[in-house]
Image (cartoon, rainbow, N blue to C red; front, side):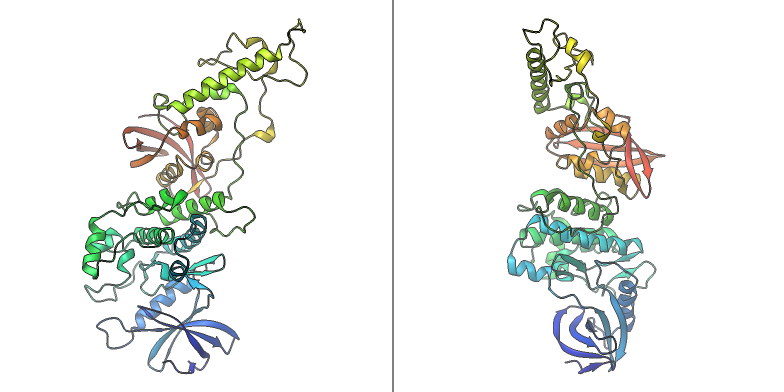
Length: 483
């Protein structure tokens, strides 16, 4: 039991939580007149006294993060031979309690929670701090706001290793395969743990099975890839990218924050408040207007960056045939029998149908000369939105959106790349014929990223993409095809 007053200032009201790193008490700060959460730092296994260095390390790690989705640490005090951390009080419940109470959560809600937490952790990673214990119990939910808490075992680059050799810290169920094998922690381990946390939220259970003891659980995590989530819906691919066994190809936390924010924006219920984490890139604009003429749909090259044209699937071919038929019918109807001049009826503006070579077809050449229109300024696509990180990370972010989120991927293309795709209609139709795309090794030479891709688990090819820096991010300026 704690004293009634801690450090002569914090009046203890009641316990509000307990974890492996200590008990948390709701207190009233008598000096500032506000509620705070005060955690008594407990003993690590094998210790004979509270570890002051660890407590102060947590205070430094968290207090330096002034972020709306990280629980703030206000103070660290030593009183009555104990160490106490004074933190922001977040009413509500943990994500773990929410899952226990409600079971599987809606993917749109989970996307919002994940985007916010990822944004906070990305800020921590940017300053060199690894959380090392991301899990549902350390995600606090207050209405529509989510925050990551408990940097109790966080380490900052350059910090000394304070736990004794062989000591297990963190929650094994959310360990990455690398941590399970005893490797040193990296930011990629936090990405895995957040992916496992989101998996637990949509599935109602962690991706790893508790084998009854830590050694058996860690062995299973190190050797067995998690089964794909069955209830994740549109989040399945994002969770899969975060749970990539290879830490090199696994998303960065900034990638995860950006992608989850986009997914939440695209799938949140109409009329709800925007609660996703602030994206490191501009707020997504409305999807660009599809090119209106049949010319666009029939003269496009392969959508950049994507498979060569010979990889196109039957839905695109059928769509092109239908477009040609509709264009022909429209031209025939427009030329009224009672009008010998052949002038289209008032108010009609038949689109120009073109052959694959790009020249007008004989059936509609006359109508094409007088009626082909160009998009107005209002129909011009919005400026390309850069992806955070380096050029290789931007390429991985781009393909991580495909084939499901064609609008989001389209917004990462520059004008030249969009032009060579033949317009959004053809671009979207092409990716409709692709079930999956896997990103293999990437390499960077100047501003050119070479990437190995596998489509639908079978067809492979190499793409060379010219990247262009925009602000602190990158866009795909041009697809140079295969090397």
